Length: 196
Image (spheres, rainbow, N blue to C red):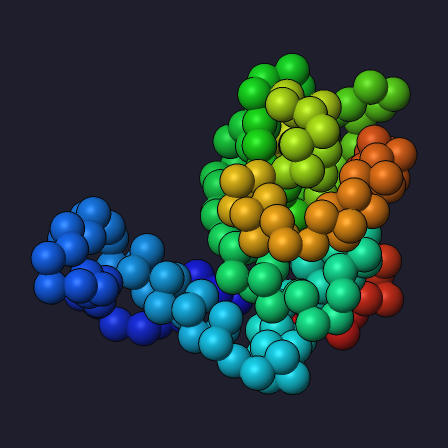
């Protein structure tokens, strides 16, 4: 997973021209991510695919949202996915509240409530597909951690920017809106069993 890769500290982007303005301040973690993303972008397509296949967690690779992606584009997901760990009792997202994020449960238990029911979910469950696609600006689900839980998450701006050169793929993802309205969206268990 990208955020667990240690690339050192103190990396700073250099101005491209001698008179260019200095870079805006950023954290060492942001600088490391920028470097990793630049390296991924410069790899040959076969290597991009192999790196993404090796590093992406099964719950991301096999998520229904990414089923429409051409195989050689999965590396872009690797470049934008982040992780977060929340304590028991933490509210992940509230129904009707502004949201622009897709959450995929990596580990833990999350109580979700949505139009039509409530469900306790675990690894592989997700919510926020419509928000990350820009089809909704508010969450359709309440989600609260029952135990300490780990999440993969992707913000809408990074997602849409990463795939802006593939409008037909974004359109195909949006066309599957009915799949994302079902609660909860789950990655098939057979897919999860093959991950680390």
